[in-house]
Image (tube, rainbow, N blue to C red):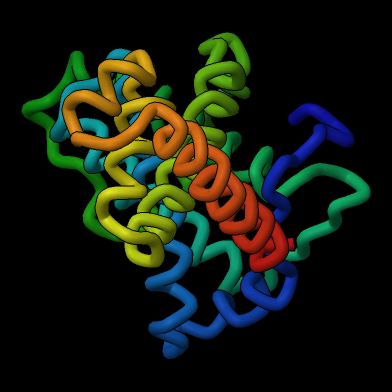
Length: 208
C-alpha cells in the first residue's frame, strides 16, 4: 500500500474501535451507509457486473469486520484507513475476476475460508484502481453533503442551486424556469454552497 497517503476524509478512530464490537449496530450502519456506494462504484468501474459488484461490497465489509474483530490496529502514521479499505476492495475485485472462469464451482461459504483465499492473492496494485477510488471517494462525500443540505434549505433555493451549480445550466435559464430574478439565483448559489461546504467539513470532522 502507498505510505503516508493524503486522506481527505480520515476515518474516526473511535468509530473503528466501536466497529470491533459486532453488537454495535449503529456504528455498522454508519459504516455501511458511508462506504457501500464507494465500494460498489469502484467495482463497477473496474469492469464487474452489478451482481459481482454487490458481492464485492458484501465480502469486503465482511473482511473488514473480521479483521477489526480480531484486533485491527489503525496507524495513521503508516497509512490511511481509506488506503487499507482500497487494498481489501481491490483484492476482492481481483478474486472476482479469477472466479469468472469457474462460475460453476461453489464459492466458500465460510467467511474464514474466503479470507484465506483473498489473502493468498497477489497485491492487486496493477488494477489501477487508486484514481477511480479517489474520484468515487470525493463523489460519495459530495453526494452525502448535498443530501443533507436538501433537507435543511427551502426547496426553491435548493432547486436554483441544483439547476445552476449541479446541472450547470445558465443563470438566466434557471431564473426563467423557476420564475425568479437572476440575482436570486446567484444568492441561492452563495447560500446553499455555504451549507454544502459546512456539511463537507462536518463529514470530515465526524470521521477524523
